[in-house]
Length: 346
Picture (tube, rainbow, N blue to C red):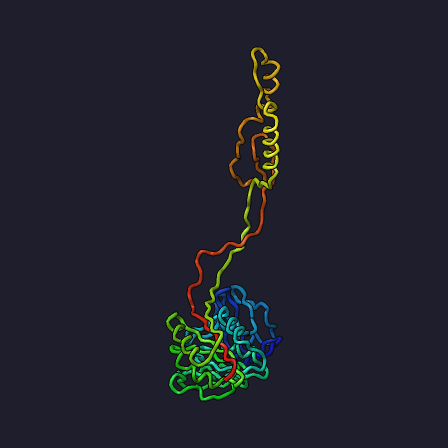
């Protein structure tokens, strides 16, 4: 199975992702005579052969989707050997390191290979990734995964403690990524690995104390444009909001006109009752219609009725509905700080 090209139908040996739910995805390699169990029932590999990627697959108690693997889907479903970077941070790393087809990247801390798969897709077909892992078993497992995914020609996996032994590379890298407990110890070796015309470097640290030491070391080795950022994912819920008795300013305009008229001619709205003139000056202003107008406005309570009265005796108006984005109260917590710097030349 290859992560660098899309296939139309499932074949034996393919790595497929079975999408069971929005938070449940099962990766496996299609093999003859093998069966995987899901909450909707058994998925027999033999029946997947010839199915198009992205289609439904009927199970005894429901259905699942057969998905073609991508770096984003692999990040959500890969077996965790270490803590991983997710798409929010990965996208910023690739953007800030200015990666493109043909780039040569040095990565310290292969881990579970989440970032590695995204880098490999970006630098193909002429780029190369040198990734280093100090844990021997994890490095062997990563090498096997890259071979199974058809990416071995674009990556070199090395088992080495780069904090103590360095990268042992010189003048080859366009960009360097450090995901280590003590990244400041590798800044000097990372500088040697970068090309003479310079490049970009990124460190991933969970606490600000590590960021401070890394920035100091980057400054000592001639790196510039040092910046630190933190990527947090904020979720929004799309809801329909309903507002009743919308006032677009018409009532305010009428009130302002009335107040101006009253100020110019107070006698027009304030009847003067003289002795024995109640019939002439007072009776005309006390008719039932005008008394109703002088009564205070009464607001009707909110109801589910799409039409509601704004004032006593007034005509009905339709409620106003619109789509709104409401931020969710719980927010994803801190993952780590990304520190970027540039090396102009050396």
